[in-house]
Length: 420
Image (tube, rainbow, N blue to C red):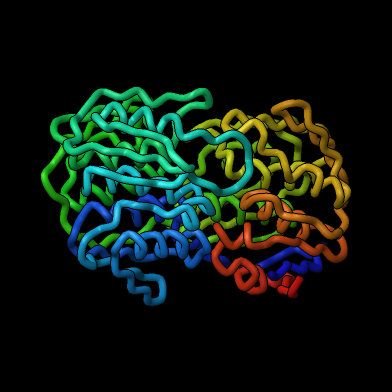
């Protein structure tokens, strides 16, 4: 197992490119189960999570060929309806094979999902959606057993305690595209990843309207075709780089970015005093002279992303004054706080709120990554800190950031790997 070693305290400079979207790639790879025809997916990021999903597709009976950033998925005989525990338990995104397996085979046996420990993440909305489509389910031995010889369209409300669910919306969409009749999903997730999935399914021949809005209308079709599709840039990776530039007071150009997907982040950073200039498909981030503390609350899209909350906390720990951060999506997602405090940050937690008193300087220390986005926050803190930071358990980081150490070296950072 490797760790990241960072010698921080110096500004970065140069260009960095955003990889394909992890959170959009996973359900789109699952959607290839809906057709027997070849599907070509381009701009796929090389990550632990995408590798896990490809292993799962192979176990379900698909052929997978990988070349550079392109993946070709083809049929390989009869599909298997059992999504094994060893794969699904390691990554929550793999649970979205439930919908396409039901639609294609009329049955599915899928292990309960795993992934980052960032608070309670039930699958109740997934189950509510597929039950509304006429599925019968049982729970046995850690698996969801679902049977639906003939899915039927339905009017489904998918709002939950903490808002809409991206994966539940994706699962219901993929089940509904081959269902008989019309399905209407109310309180659907509006994230760009759902819009990407809807575009992919539409190119396969699905009849979908409203994806990317709270109301999605799907008219079922009999079959779907193969397709060639290019993944959109990863908005969370892009947001991480923007915050990184601000925290390290760096001049940075970020390429392959859809800034309109990060409006909430840009709005907050403009208030903080960070200068962001747009240029076609790239942006230029310039360090502000006198940054101000700006409180923030996460919400489902188009609100401030919960997946950027930890990174924003790392930035605010270096801005003089008091900042209050509230997470309305995952109220327990604050495992990065004690690790940032080990580096000299002054953060305390009160329930679902983090209160940050900005300090002038962070200092390198050995820290432990607890989840994917907390890992990114520790990298940002390490780059901004004085001295050496050792980040353990970087396998979390490798789930969502492609070749991050190499990208940072290209910006002049002193970052390398060492064996634990």
